[in-house]
Each structure stands twice: as structure tokens, then as C-alpha cells.
Image (cartoon, rainbow, N blue to C red):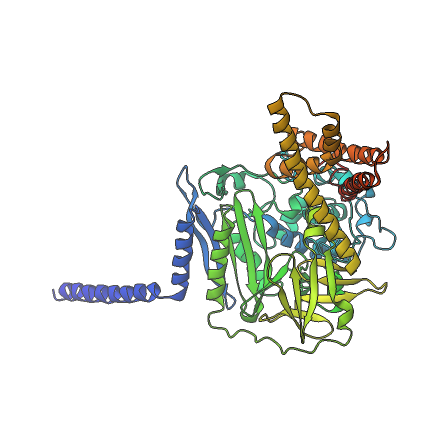
Length: 615
């Protein structure tokens, strides 16, 4: 009879004890740095109207958090979880690199093999094929000499999906190496498309199937896919524009190896862990440590061959923040942004995926996570400054970009991004036409770091044939002072004539409307002489404000205007020497005509008016 009251007493005491423990645990959790981090990320999500954030946090080799915050779909209210799928965009390139590294470990290829051994020259052109053939590792490091894919290729939509070779053939006549392969790294989705084609040729399987069977399944990422599978349709979060409200339809990427992968926090955690554990997952070897280290190290640029270890490796790049060196990749797909980054010094890293195009929100989340992961670390101190080399004077002067990610804007970047390298006692200043100069500190062998940074990220290179280059996150070649001033003068004259043409056309139009008559012969000739510059202004308006995609009205007008610039430039040059004119008048007319020819030839040389704008 005494047992029952005793049992009730013990039950009450134990309940109070457990409640006390639970309350203490909750209080501890409330102040836990990890929970504070999650709350900060949730606050960023809400403030930026991000529907969902997929998240993986690994610290000191242990997964601390994986899951999602928010809702996967606003219309249905579907809750986002660790099994919610997101589009990870260009992080796909990391997995494409893994696939090729596995093939190399199996002895089925070497990364130094030529692209032409696997893909026909019908799909691309390389003017340096004999002395500098494109290799597989150049494709993965974006040093093959290609610009990025065209607007028509980006806009291509085919849910079938289209085969990889058909995707490469879509704009094949314009897949040209525009600078010598194996010199400069310039980000190009086309490169990774060709890398996928190499995989298909070697394995006899589609890229999508091989990636699933030999990479994703081995990483226990069984539902992740570059295809729009039934599982993806069911579990994929809805993508939204940067405003957080407008839905973005699924983007059926033309060349899936560069950015089509869909994955979840639960499955991405495995890929992140494998990279941090140097190729091993759950005690099993997926890749060798040597392969992982090769992923993280550029080798094919001029700077890498000189000894610079900072840069873009095989689907893996480096970034420095507050004295810490991160490895990883970012990704963008319509309606989605993502990042995967890891830090070797404390075996930590993260994956963050959002179903929004708002890059500022992703940047804020990245910064918050990185600060958390390094909070208990002491940053590496910058190495000592070294004196400049005795031959440094040879490297001082003007530098002009030699690469561009976009084909259409190459002519502008070539002119407006000229920079000057000057000496300031025992450091260098690298300054452009706009913005503050970058202060470069010597680290030995003409390798430099930005002042207050820790790791060298810039190299000065002199090739065997005497060419001088500067490589950092861009690629620049030294030009003579005379070349700089000639280009600057031509640019200023063409700019002045373009502005004058706009005012003159407006003046004549208003004047003749007021007089209610057509321009006279003299006015017509003046308008004809400056019309190439007037049409040049129209090209800019078309580029900025109108669609120039394949088949659009804007593209047709652009083509006609470009052709008119060439024809009228030649015509005005001929007319400048026809008829009787005073010497001063002839000089003026011939000078304007010469500048119009320079403009036409320049635009033609840079392919702005010599091929369809969308290509």
C-alpha cells in the first residue's frame, strides 16, 4: 500500500528534475553560438524576402547543422527541409571535375590529353591547334581561350532534354579560341560543356547518367540530378526573382555539365564532407588526396607556371577573407543562388542555397557563416614585404586586358579597362581610369599580394618571346606608351564625334521641321560624314535597352546598323577626296572620314558587327 504513493513521489521528483534539465538546456541552446548563427541567417532571410535557405554547417570536421529555413513554395506553403532540393548552378562544375579526376585515377584518361582526341574540331576552332592544343585540364581551369557561351545559348530552352553534342553544335561555328590556350584563365561555361563531352566519349554514357552512377551515387547523393526528374519535380523549391515574389520557371540548361545540378542540404553535406576529409567519405575513399589537391591548385596559366598557387583550379577556386584562405565555388541558376566553401585550417565549411536571385542576401549569409567558422581561430599574419627586383622598371607602364568573358563587350573592356603599373618606393600601384589604385606588395620572384592581404594573388610574367603580362583575377598585357596614347586619342576623338553627331542630328531635325523643308545638300553631306558615329550611338542604345536575342527585331536592327557603319565609313572616306575642296576643308573631311574607318575596322575586328549579335 506504500508502494503506490512512493512511486508517485518519485515520478513527480523525476519530472521536475527532467524539466529543470530541459529548461537549462534550452537556456544554454539559446546562447549557443550555432543557434545565434541560425537566428542571424533567419533574420537575413526574412529581411530580404527569401522564401527558403538550404544550409549545411561543418565545423572541426563535424556536421553541426543541415536543413532548411523558410518555405519551399509560397503558393502552397510547403515547408523547406533538409530534403528540399535547390538548384546549385555552377557548383556543378566541381562535380564535373570530380568525374574527370575519377576517370584519371582509373587510368582511362590524363588531364593533359587533348580535347581533339575526344571531340571533333567541327564543334570549335583553335587557331593555335598545332603549337597549343586545348587540353582537358585547360577546360576545367577555363584556360582554353573561349569566351563564355552566347546569349542564344543561355536562352535556349528544351525540356527533352537536348543531347550534349547537339548543345555544343547549336552555336558551334562561333566557338572560337580567341586567345592562345594555356595562358589566361577566363571563366567560360563553354569550357565545362566540352569537358562533359569528353566524359561521354570515354564512357559511352550520357554525361547525366555517368555523373549519377559514378559520382553522385558514390557520394550518397542518390536523388541529386542534372535532369528534371520526377523526384526533382516533387522536391524542388520554387525559384523566385530578386524581389522574392515573382516565380521563375525551371531553366533547362543547354550544356548541363556547367550548371544543371539539383541537390538538397542532406545530400550536399556529403560532398562538402568529402572535400574537407581530402577525398574520403564515411571512411571510404572516393578520390585520392592528390586528386583533391589538384582540384584546388591552378597549373595551366602563365602565373601558375611561374609559381602562383592562388587562382581557379579544377572547378574549384580560392578566396581570401580576413587572413583565411577558402576553397570552393559559387552557383547561379534562374531563381536560385548557392555557395560551397571550406577552410582546411580547421576542417570547416558550409553550403548555402537560396531560392532567390538576390545576390546581396547570399553575400550577407556567407559573411555571417564565415565569421562563425573562424571565430576561435587566429588569422595567418601577412608575410614580410620584400624589396622589388632589380628589373622591375621593365614591367612598369600601361597594361591592356587580353581576355573577356563576354564576346560582345570585348571591344569596350579592351579600351576602358587599361591600367597603369607604377612604382611607389618598394611597392607597386596598379590603377585604372576609374577607382582607387591597388597596392601590391612583393612576395618574391615577381609574385605580389594586395597590401593588408595574406596570400600572393598577382604575378608579373615575361615570356620567352619577350611579352610581358600581369595576371591576378584578370589578364593584362603590357603595351607601349605610344599604343596607349594612340588608343586614348582615338577613343576621345570618336567619343567627341559621337556626341557631336547626336547634337547635330537633333539640331538639323528641329531646324528643318521648323522651316518645314528637307535638309539642303551641304547639310546632307555633313550628316552623311558623321553618320557612322551617330549609328555607333544607336548600337549602344540597342545593346542597353533592347533585346538582341536570336530572331528579335533588335538583333535585325543591330545587324543592319553595323553593316551601315561599315558601308558609310568607306563611302565617306572616298567622298573626302572627291571634288574640289580647299586644303583645310579636305583635311577636315579626310580626318573625320579616317576616324569613321577606324571605328568601322575596330568594331569589325572585335566581331561586334561582323557576326550575329546573339552568337
